[in-house]
Length: 312
Length: 253
Image (tube, rainbow over all chains, first blue to last red):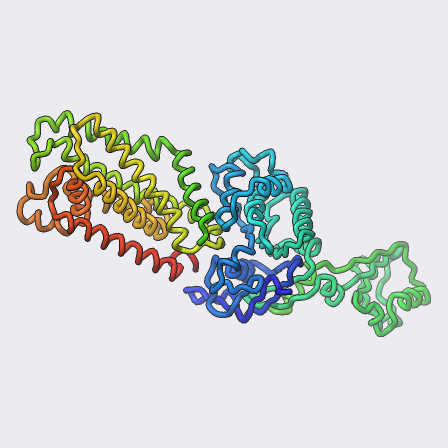
């Protein structure tokens, strides 16, 4: 099966000389949810803009469902739906008119049934005759998604889809994205919200200073790069960590009431002294008791920050 | 060809006209009608005939041309400038539509509106001045060609303009003065010899003259010169639009 997107040696330099992208190679498989993460100015929007036809590449090739975006731009673009970052719309058009316009623009014959399905799935049906200027920010964001879905695209780009929306709407949007994936739509999203990528993505791509730093399955990424911490709450403060425990990666909080043990998720027994079970036994032998314990796994955000720091 | 795409752009632009009926249709018809009232009936009755045509009737083609040029430029420039300004241009640029189809949609709609306005003003003029049209088909050809050409010019201005001031710059500072000095209210041979020569460098003279010829069979320059001039202007605009889309000028960085 053709990948949804294949990017080969893609570079972009602007007239000012700024290199936004450098030799990007990326393949996004059909039917997956791919999250592209990166700090501001990393090149996320430039990459999406080139794939969607908004920006001309300086060099390299991009194929959408096997179609070159330059020589077969019609076939390539008709497969794509784009939800931009900014809430842009024709303020005085109705919801129905603007979504129908999008369908026509992408070369599809009028299909009121499909428009109705899209509007209902995004809970916009009751607002179909409302002018866009009268809608809330969240509703406008939904209209942009409806416009992108009007021509039944195989690939949906969501550029910061939940920027500035409240928690409830964000979760609703996630639900919409999952439903789309179930219908076979490939979803590519850029986001600042690591939680969003962690919640939805199958694979994560990290872009930094115009280069792809890594592309990895989300769970594998978290297993490989994620760290776990075990916190032990001590009934009485400890002055220092006993020398017998030096083999473990232990830290003592300033007040001496908490002992923190950090270990790899991928290999909890990697600790040369034998991992958690051994640690607990040695603590007992050293006469150190604890009243409570909890564990915390590093989030995608922690992983992302450490990746970017490594690069800097 | 993406005919649905062209249709979507065209209908969307025409729908905008319906939403702004007062500004798009009523206002230009009313303001041009005021010229007929003032120059056609009030002052015109005291001015002698020009080339055997009643003065009120003589100025009608020029006034229609004045409105046609300004409205064509204004409609087409706003049509493409507004999506740039509001950010909705992203959808146009990411859609499977060719540059020709985009131009066809926007310029087609702008030209349609201008032709409709021209015909409306022509009908309105009939209430105020004694009108006759000797060559109606030629009159329609001039109307359509001029609307199309200046809508293309407007489209170029809309892409070039980065703000509303620039959008108004060419219509107000170039087109309106050239039209007023292009024989709208007078025949060229009424000017001193030097000005007669200088006036021939004004392309609007050829448009007004050709259009007036289709009404009364008289013009400042030959009919062929008028037709050639408008076709040259049309060709130049088409070439510029083609270059804009090929280079991505102010559309695709």
